[in-house]
Image (cartoon, rainbow, N blue to C red; front, side, top):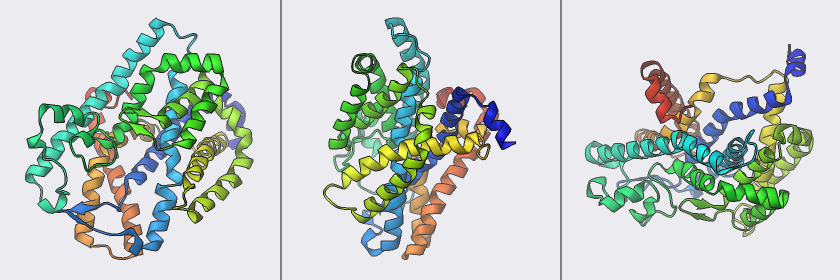
Length: 375
């Protein structure tokens, strides 16, 4: 069966299957990135310090700060590829039509989920036990009109102690920055047409020299990886076919980079290892997925693929509360207990999210489609 499947699948079909297959595992990776115990604050008290749990902190760093860091850049890459996919030219009419489509798929869910988080936080601050809230953030009942508006774009303007410029539904910084890149997509198109691969290389160098550059809506990571994906699409290149031959070289190189990233964590030049891990991990993820899909060993699950956006949109606040509740109940004080929670918290949130998504899709299919961007 595996061999027959291999010969029947076209290159374009394989590329499509890789894109769809990756949606769910990449979201799982994002949830693990956010399963961070380093800054759990309840009633103003920080719960644990990582220096006291060296085994857990090492494993957390390996997965949430090294391996899974390729997930979001890969989403930007796929978004750039799909934005220009099968587009002939890039006229004003095509641009406006694409903007119109993204209002449904990005802007409407963006507004809905941020508003929902604001309302849930208001209820939590009003009715939940004080031990489950950090006590650091401004009460939503005290928000001014300007605070409400900033919550949809950059909550650091409302709560100055926040170091990152994130919307109130913090994972949606990806959608915020993606929408900004899309607004500038004609410039991306012109750069790729005029400079070809040099456009990607220049943006890549800017990212390597300052990978953590973020302004609200403007991040170098979004422009670089979106442009990299767009390059393949604009030049009518199948990125899976281009990357597939690199699998044997990418795997050992990636292992070497990961080992070095663990060993040199904290070094002044660690950011270069971080960038190397993402640059190699991204095509490795694609090529490994292509290999197992083409051989018939991995198969698409349409329910997981379709539910991925819902998990992404909903997971942040439930994850925070699950972490705090389990910390309050279990008082973890060992590496083993923390590792167990590191696995349990994402599993609980993801399974609960899939259950809610399934029920919503059965009872309110049109509403579910709207809040999931038509997915």
